Length: 569
Image (cartoon, rainbow, N blue to C red; front, side):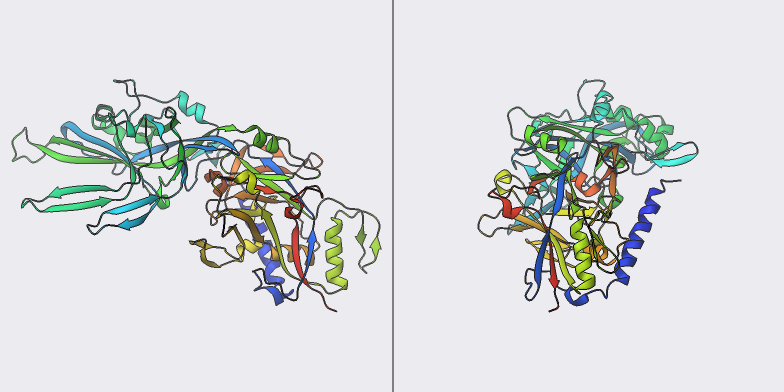
């Protein structure tokens, strides 16, 4: 039986959607207002308390994409991403053949790419996508046999639970790695240094030329991919000469050959980079090891010494995890480990991986007044922020109509100068680790910044300055979320979380290894999960928070909740 918190989350989602559906007639006048044209509407701004929250070791298995490489960021520091995964035979209980002789063992992992141009001869020039850092960066890459038997689930007390692996477990896998027993070196100990000591993500396509019996040439073009020649003697003994029972079933094979561990290090003084790789395309195998070999023919009419060409494929599939080693810059480390949870922070540091999020409380903490059922002011706290009390009273007694509500996060362009900027941020219900109703109700799509995107009304998409070509801000629409809070006094004004995201369609969460108390004054409020799409992303950004002194040059860029109203005369 799996954790019941998932069922609880589903019930919360259903409740929120029901409230939104029942409340659709509450000011439908502004439903189509998503741009910056607010003619005839009046803007009110409200306080936002926002502070940094460190993401401590977090679950890193079950991700859609996995990072591999080293990313040097002048704002956040250096992040190294290693990778570990199980492997599986494409066909169980293979017939190996007698006296096998390996010709080649090749590991291939496709890269994300797009075609830049095509020559008259049909040769393609590619550009690699999802590569961060110096495009000419080089890495020392080592591939080992993993000595840790990973699993998808485990039983405890008769109940089944998902097995979790965390970003800080690299030492466990490093300590239990296996080298080739003959050479004492990693499995990718090729003579070609571009496959190990000076590995780089090569954007060049591979062209394979074959000839038929008549001498006619055929060209096969393969899009850019990682191609590593692995140790033939290791796979001869480990796979082709393995006891047949070890290859007979997935569970037996995964206990026998526990997987691969990819380790990255600096390559001398070379610059570095990091790639997001799709090892498991749509849940299936995308990366594989292809063993090509010869074995004695099974055809009885052939001479005994006749050899035939054979192949065996091992897919990279099953349990997998990203393993991080971070060296944080001192300013960033201070910001996320010593946040101002009372007054908020001046700068908000968002970073993916084992990074950081921003915790957001709308309307601040001030609670000195309230209103009774007749709209009469009462000078005593009521557990509701005073600004929210004012809004509810204005809507109820003055018939104000909320047409749009948004948060605009201004980017600290000075701090972010010369760095990679995330194309999108994601705002969610932090208390319940769920998307907001504005996200759930947005079915829009379109091309923004030259990229096909979904949820473009809800947004969180970076705004680009036409002159500098750098980001200026992120705007997120939360109109329906605010309407629910205004109209339904029983709806909790939940804390919100803001993270970078590499995939707006992924809203599931990853568990923290150890939960963290968000507010010392509220012992039951913990930060225990982080959005999975943020864990996948290596990028970060610095935004202006709400606690900027009035005399500061960036005071106008401080974070505020913006609500556009129709106010009857």
